[in-house]
Amino acid sequence: MITRQIAVGLGLTGIILFSTKAIFAKLAYQYGADTISLLLLRMVFSLPFYLFFAL
Image (tube, rainbow, N blue to C red; front, side):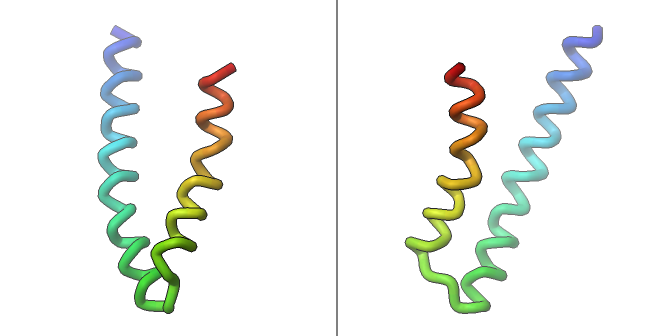
């Protein structure tokens, strides 16, 4: 039962974060950010998570 609640919670968190990504991208483009800079920021922020899961 706890595993199912954790899975639902992680799923909902993923849905919310994925949907806010477009909002942040629109705001960044509005303030003059370019595509390469946004891609670099996404990679820098995701690197610790990939390293954690790799270990």
